[in-house]
Length: 450
Image 1: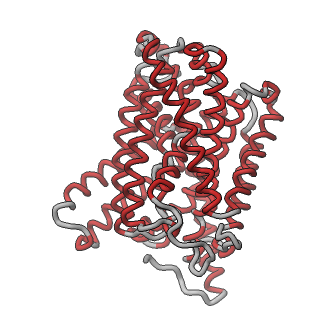
Image 2: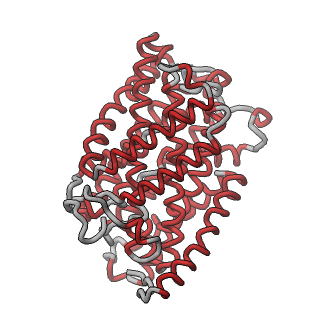
Image 3: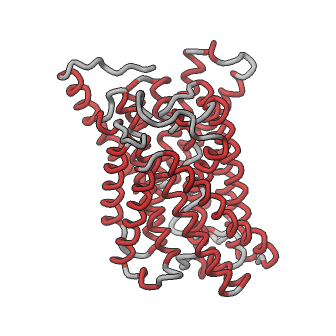
């Protein structure tokens, strides 16, 4: 939060930070991914193994960087510390885009599960209207400040885990191993096994995007040097356990050709296990989970521009707080951008729309991870005295493996996502140049690494 703002310092403790981490990860990814992974069969398990290992490496990276710099800004702050203001700006620019691109996917998935209760939402126009309505509902909650956000997030995170664990446990008693058989090469969608594993790893990585969430609103965290690393690691491991338990159970309950066409796979799996009441219970849980994820990511899409705006890299208006201590202009601007994306991409088959958006969202989300793992290595090289001699070899290994994993995950998102994501990335450069010209014209000091 901006200096001198009205928000009370240290209003988020360990459980609120953990709820933010889990809430931002356990949302649209877990509830629609069984359909996305159905075509890959048992290869998806290898994708989960790769993405979970990579997520743990990234969680360790962010935990260590949070101890190095517990200030607000998250990935932006760490990249700026390692490489300077220009790299920090590019990281913030891409990360901000990842937030509102991801929110479009979450809103679309939320409406997909709401179809269970309101079948009319199958109409594309009504689906778009409903998705936009939820986006703005969460925006208005976050405009009320961090306290209102935390109350809603803690409640939604607790509620969302109940149906997931229910299906995840009961599903293993009705598991069909043949549904997770490795498909023949000719059955894969125009790719070999290596590319299929990379694609499943990219799809499953979407479920881990958000593991760094607790690092962004650091100014509002009590004892951030201790709280943020603990919440990041615990939240990542807890989410990974829920994912593997529940999604694999769903894949073993339904034939792949049926699962691939389902717009609410967890609810369909619960109907098999428990009948109609289970179907509606899990569908309600999915709506709650997506709403919690949307709420958390709306917080981030407002908070991400604050630190760069404070440093003169983003428009100063994006760093201004309202009387509740919320970055109102950032929330309004992000809400409008998400609305525009839903209007553009919110047509067509739900699973196809979801896959396109999450691969683009994953691509833009992984770029900051590559920046941060490289920043850890840079800080080890130029400020080794900040790290204990015993920890340096381990941190070099974590940073190196995390960086390689980030590059591999980028490859897995595919040519289309990388093409559009690269255009988004490069489009930020002239805006950076314009900010430097604007600052110079106003006589403001040039931003420097802190």
